[in-house]
Image (tube, rainbow, N blue to C red):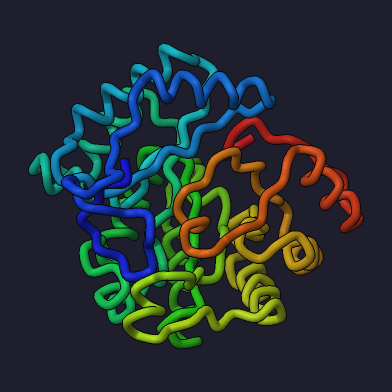
Length: 299
């Protein structure tokens, strides 16, 4: 759904429930999307949307079960800490209870979306309706205790300081260090620059994307050094393009991400790069590496 009450200043995707163009994806629409995914050789569905004020936990568990019935082999990489906090508040239950019910319904892994910058000064300004730093981390800690594979992200280049970027990386490293010995924890880290086109941050506060190509590679290399306990680093070719993403493979990157058949959030804020399977294979080979397809987040 694109219906969301978070009110993020960098998001052009969300809308109110009574807005023209608001929607909740139907099962028939999912059936078509999944069939096309399998036709292209894809295996994983990244399923996210807004913090819908009227959709509770039973909606998502029912949806996940329906999707698994449609395609039992489908890897469901879905929701994220912000949605888990939202559902826990709606249902009056713990993060653990939400995650346990979601995994029982078919959740395979938890995206690291909604991290933005893990500093409350920043979060209260750019995403006032989303979970705070401690809540985001607590959901991830709970997921690790339940051995749910997770990813971690960073959206930078807006109002954060360099110190807050480093704090973000330190909190991820500390959370990963605290995971149970046999847990997946954070399987990957994906940073991307703020996409500013038509956002409230740009129009009302004059905040532009401050990340240069050099700055992105520098942040990526810094993350590779600092996140020594997270095995996979993935450049965001969708937001920085192939040239910069290829450089990142020489700066600690070991995953190029997916084709992303359909992407509706950062593309609405200016991300315009696209490719197909052969495009990704060629980009990896041109950078001097051997491409291999993974079947899901942890494969």
